[in-house]
Image (tube, rainbow, N blue to C red; front, side, top):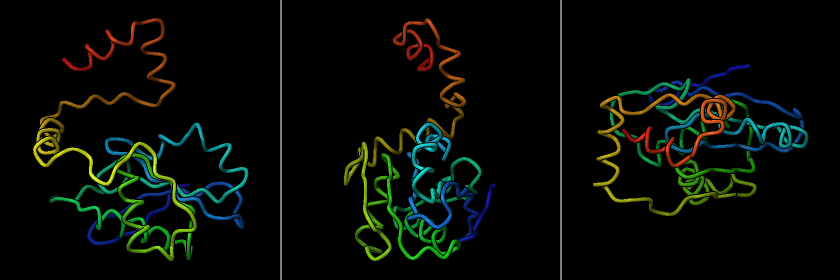
Amino acid sequence: MDRSVTTSGATISYTVEGVHDAAPLLLINSIASTREMWARQLPAFAASYRVIRYDARGHGRSAAPDGDYSIEQLGRDALAVLDDLEVPAAHVCGISLGGLTGMWLGVYASGRVRSLVLANTAARIGSVDSWSERIAFVREGNVLALGTPDELKAQVKGQNMEDVFLELAK
């Protein structure tokens, strides 16, 4: 069931699945993805944890207010989700941008983090110029809606992946 919390001018959409009284696990998605990126891991995690997945500000079902978003803002959005659920501390796992958000939580809200898994991330990813180019590219409408992992697999089944990526890059 979708839930939401409003914080700093944005409504953040999230779901909670798994064992209600188990340790909470907060999963934070990467840039240009949604909480659905965790769908394959959900059955395993939900068997042992209270799994909290949310769409980061500007992604999926969460609001995308105008303006720039800082890592601090993304971290505060994560805290708002935990606060809305009255979760004092959670295990946190973030991928890429979600990892940067997790780092912020680890430094500035360490009491809210039981453990921290940082996947495919770094303290700094890219440069201001490279991100400005990517933002402009996305704002020009150059991003394809690929669908779920299973839908994407069905679309590319039997195709050479290099050809698929070359086609997507056009």
